[in-house]
Structure formats: structure tokens, C-alpha cells
Image (cartoon, rainbow, N blue to C red; front, side):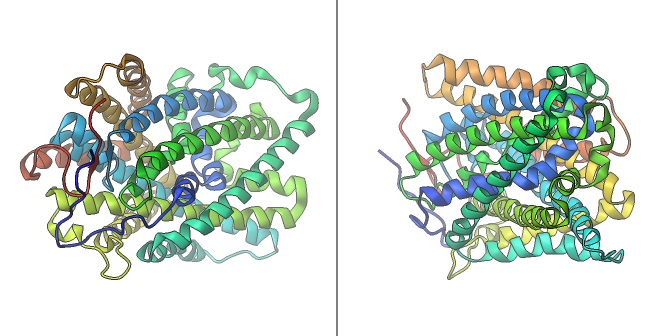
Length: 470
């Protein structure tokens, strides 16, 4: 029997407000097919080089091992706090605070990475149309990619998610069509050598980072967890959305990674990431200016969608942390009409602005992007590592005897994730690695604070739906 869903008087989310299609939309736009090809896949290419398809294949194994963790947890615990509450159930308050911080910061840093790469997309399209934008336009484009998602997140999510599902489907059709053309046009140049890990930067070490960055490109499905308290029939809705979104994304991106490397040239991949918008360059070769501009507009819209989904997720995480006592009670306030976590949204925007403009001021757009996206990747990997361990802890405590999916698979995920995290930490280089250590320091600080500030024992209250153990 489900526990009663209760929240403090400071605010509550709207129950039964969304259906399966809205939750699917959250997972789809959180992945942002064109945005991921442009941003996360570009970052992975910096390390993976000609072995990018191999790195994507390894990243697929990593993300599928991890999605088992969220899928199994979704059978028992569903909360707006998402990852924070899963770890809280398995490993307690201290690690829940640390993991929630890692997950939240990783997501918000991805918004900043999007904001730093979006000007390259805009500039490429503008120059194709014969206009050379002035230097200040990057600020306007970056602000646009953050302010618009903030505004959309302020209102009810239902209409936004309906729109997001349509645009995500259009993006998938465009990517499949372009990549199919690249593969067919390559003819005899198609090769399996792109699955040789030795073609990566620094060999296996580069594969470790590229694998993690690939898993970021493949990620997004776990964002559906944050909608559990607002969706109809959450048990079935969340589980189905996790599987449908994740397997679709994996198939799409392995194909895309192969096609893009073949089209660019495996031996020329050192210039892929530094080109700013390689997909647009290839699109221009295929269909000229018109196709390039169309893809650019869709990619910018995809970035907006990703940022909307991230704000939805992290704002609800902050909301839940506020009602649990980790954050001040004001964090748990919602809009009196729209029932959205407004304090959480404002907090998200503040972090995004800081993490966009400070790195750019210090290192410039390109290096600043690498600093931010590498730190985001480390945050995701650390969160996935602890959450996978938390599933084992939860299963042990609840005496769940399903060995394969509650013990063996998460243990394998932990092994892969440890290797991937090592690849993010070593070899250490300035300034790219600096963001990783700053993030890890913040995670450690919040974890310590969580042990002293958080109240309550585990789960089953404050808006959490908890199923009886199996």
C-alpha cells in the first residue's frame, strides 16, 4: 500500500497533471538529440578522436548499466527529488546530499556548456547568410538559451512538454536522414577501424573521458524521475519512459557517431571539436546554406529544450531538498497558481549565469566550454556511481533477493564508472581539469553539511511515494 503523499504548507506540486506522453517528452528534450550531437558529442570527440564510435559504444554500455539502477529504484520510490531521494533511501542523508549536489551541478553546468556552444551555432548560420555578427552577440545568444528556459519553467509544464515531444521527433528524423546520407555517400570509405580505441587521444585514458562524455550525450532519461509526483499512474509511467527513451537514444547515437566520423574523416578528427559546430559544417556540404540554417535553428531549439528539462529536474530537486531540511524551508515554496518550484528555478538560473560568464571571462568561450563540460561529466559519473551503489544498499536493507538486477548489474556499473571517473581526473591538466576538482570540493562540503542539517530518517514522507519491498 502506498504511503500518503504529504508536503509542508510552504508549497506543493500539482498531482496528476501530466500523462505518459509528457513524461516521455521530458526524457526526450532532456537528451536533446541535436543539442547532444552539437555539444556533448563534440566534447567526446575532443578525446575520442577517430575512435569516437568506440567511445560511444562504451558509453552506451555505461548508460544502460546505470539506467537499470534508476529503473529498479522507480519500482519502489518516486519523488520530485529524483536521484537525491534514491540515494537517501539506499545510503542515507550524507551521501544523498553529496549525490544530489553532484547531479544538480552537473545538470546546471550542462546548461552553461550549452550557452557557451550556442553562439558558435548562431555565428555559423549567420555567416552562411552573409552576416558577420559583432563580438557582443555571443552574450545575447548565451542569455537567450538560459532566460527562455527559465521563463518556460515558471509556468505549468504540460504545454511545454507537448511542444517538446513534437520538436524532439523532428530532430530524430533530421539526424537519421543526415547520417544515413553520410554513410551511403561514404561508400567504400566505411570502416570498422573507428572502433579501435588506440585512435583516441592518449589511448585508453582518452577513451575513459570520451566514454563519460558519451554517456552524457546518451543521458537524459533519468530526468523523468523528477515528474513522479505530478504524473498519472507514476509507477508504470516512469518505468516505461525510462526504457523507451534510453534504448531509442542509444540506437540513435551509435549510428550518429559512426556516420559523423566517417563523413568528417577518421584521420582528421583533431579538427572536429575545435570547428565549433561540425554538424553544421557537414550539413552545409550536403544541402548548402538553406539546410545549414534549418539545422542551426533546430539545434538552438534543441538546446532550449534541454535547458528547460534540466531546469524542471533541478528545480524540483532543490524543492525536495528544502522540504527535507537540507536547504532552507524557502526552497520548498511553489508558485501559488502554477505550482512550480519558483525558488528552485531562480537558484538554477543564478548558478547557470555564474558558470557561463566566469569561465568565459577567464579562459574564453572554447576553453571555458571544455572546463565546464568536463566538470559536468565528472559530476554525472560521480552521481551515477553513488546511485548504483545505493541500489545495492537499498536491496540489502530491504532484503530484496533478485540478485542479477539489484546486485550484479549495479556492481558492474560501479566498476565501469570508477574507470570513467579516473579518466576524468587523470591525466590532470590545467585549466580543463580545474572545474572537476572545484565540483568535487563542493560535493564534499555539501555532503558533510547534509549529515548535520538534514532531518528525518529515510523515506516514506514529504511527498515520496514508497512501494512495499519485493
